[in-house]
Length: 62
Image 1 (cartoon, rainbow, N blue to C red):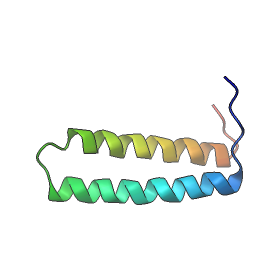
Image 2 (image 1 turned 90 degrees about the vertical axis):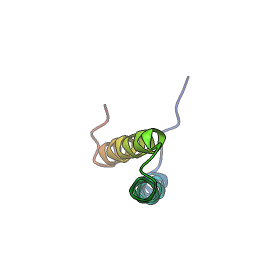
Image 3 (image 1 turned 120 degrees about the vertical axis):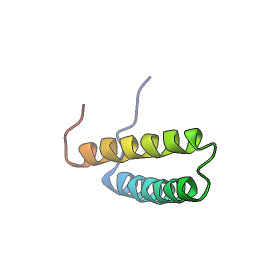
Image 4 (image 1 turned 60 degrees about the vertical axis):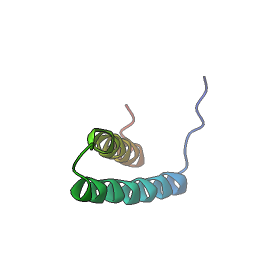
């Protein structure tokens, strides 16, 4: 499986998209505390993706 190296611009767009999604998920957790397990997983997943994208931007590929 060959992965295409993402461009800086596409990574920045992805970071902004994930930050927006992350914010929405956090708001959802505040409003609907019941049954939030999926939302919490979504927030953690989004934060991990942001960290990974930032690491790539900084040239710290894993």
